[in-house]
View 1 (cartoon, rainbow, N blue to C red):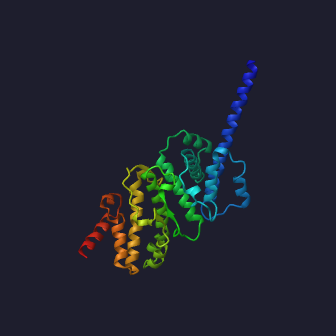
View 2: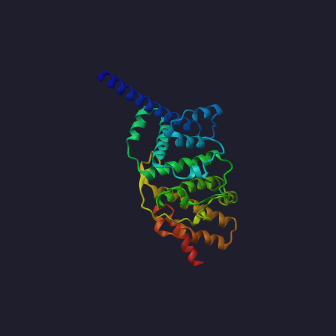
View 3: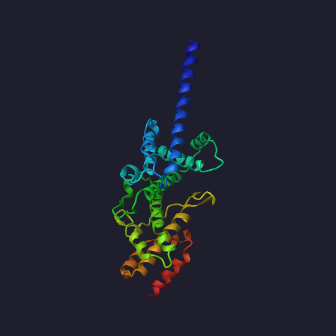
Length: 299
């Protein structure tokens, strides 16, 4: 009897160990494929077929998401993917992203040890949500061409987002992509190609039925996280709201240069957080903003 129990226990423990090893191997495979194909490189049909075969049941959501992020003309903006996943899936995708980063290091740590450490680590939920939407909008930007959100109206109450912080993260990650789409036209040519930049701005999405710039729910509590590895932990709002202010000011600059009406310029100035001086502490452009409104009052 004792021998039978020991045999059964050995069988169960072996099965658990095998299951964990298979689970880890799938995470590692997804991390490597994300590293290889997240930019312009395209996975082969055979590669995609392998990724979709024999996926553990508890990894199917994360697997499907990663496949979309490496696929041209993907479905990342469908309701299925744009809606916030459950916490467990968010953490799996975070781990996959960290494995991808580990593959980029010359002095890699063992991937299994990395997985074990991250699974046992308590990671702030806002960091997991931010990672998800960062990867989602990166996938849209890298794989869906041409850039065009003109038909998108993001209804933030429809995506399982838990509070204003998560909604703000969604918005700021989307606008981070939008801002990067015009950065080159503003900063590289001399003079700036404001005509082309404004064409892109006119393709920015709506949020809750309103122009993007009218979104203003940024009064959630700030938090710190590592955004750029070399910088260490920093203010989330200080990083992303600063970038958003830059996008708004680039929009205003384009309107001026392209001869927009006073109504169009005032809609942007007075209908956005450009006027919200309570948020100026989160941007390096505080003096520029104050000067704009000083001149605006004179007019």
